[in-house]
Length: 280
Image (cartoon, rainbow, N blue to C red; front, side):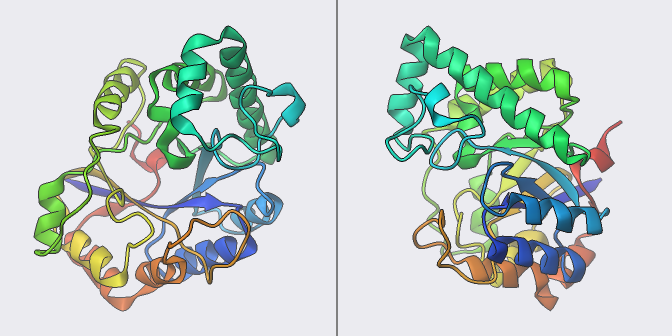
């Protein structure tokens, strides 16, 4: 049986992102969105989500390169001079291993983001993290432990089969994901042990920021059995604070509403929804 979750990350980052999420859900194949609870347009995202009860919304934990929920002064090991979560992920990971204080700050910030999500009143469909930082073993442990108290039932495991990409685009030379592959495998084991729902595969890693209409339609045409998450970064246009350089935001929005994408999703025979729709 084919099951498909089509997710938009960075919900709440900007009005341009929020508008694209709404367009892609109302008129396209988008079924879920991952909310950044402390981003500039988070309140607008929550209001839109409440007007679209069929949109499944989850928590997009921000532990790198964006706005924390707690005051930066409470997170001295995790934030930079601008009050944002640090961007040097390798160094942050090392600090988490070496500094008990950093681990305490991490747990406090993760808890604060779960609390902020709970305060929205939205059901929690899933959890993932900005730039997939939740695959770090120490961060994963904190998320799995803290998430239990907030009815976390599904989590993204970023694993993408390269052979599927090559079938979708014969000339594809996808960049390797060896840097996170071992940690993703470990996360899958730990998540299953915790009784969480995880996707069998997550599409959108190699072509992050470049999930064009042609690529999305081609991937959907190759959809295997099992639970697939296809994730995207749609926006009506770029130019907003926090955008990722080089991302084709409008093209990713177009990919979610293109007739070819809708036709490919229908032809796949996949049952579509959020993670919560596929819980036993």
